[in-house]
Length: 210
Image (cartoon, rainbow, N blue to C red; front, side):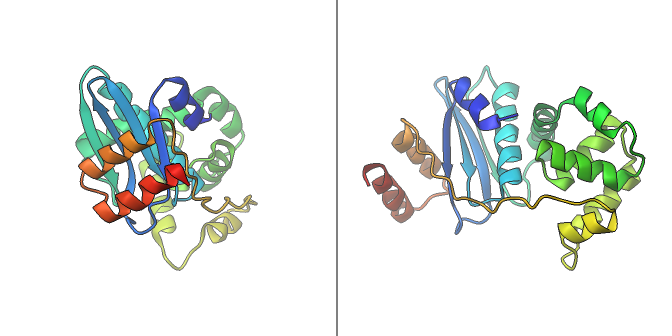
């Protein structure tokens, strides 16, 4: 599922820009006077960007009839708003019927998660949480996978090799700059949320005319 194409098709303003130095900023959703926009930090790894975009799209549908501001930081913010948006994102990116077919002959929880990660291009933690929600793996299995991912001495390739799964390496962040027709307006809104300095705003604003 191409979440970025879906956002554009829905007429939501999409702004992707690498905010490497604002390292805790993941994405944002804002709707004002009926005009929605989604921001995604393109300095993140592609799988993370996809889930962030789908998460922000979830905020759009969850609050579609009202003006709404939401900023997603790392680590994640308010569970009150983020858990339903995460649920939406997982269901948007992972087709349940094809998932059942993919995992039908697989019994090992870690292998299930790794296969789904590869198939749907979603991070291993997000997949583990979703599989547990669907009852495909147990809560204990989910926790073991999350613990393994958070271990700084272990890479994803190590985890996959231990499970006998060969992974295609995820492309590195490409620092996409998708400015859009309403770039300056969206940029001003991000500054208005307090996550962009005046100096950085001026630097980014000049890109439209470069």
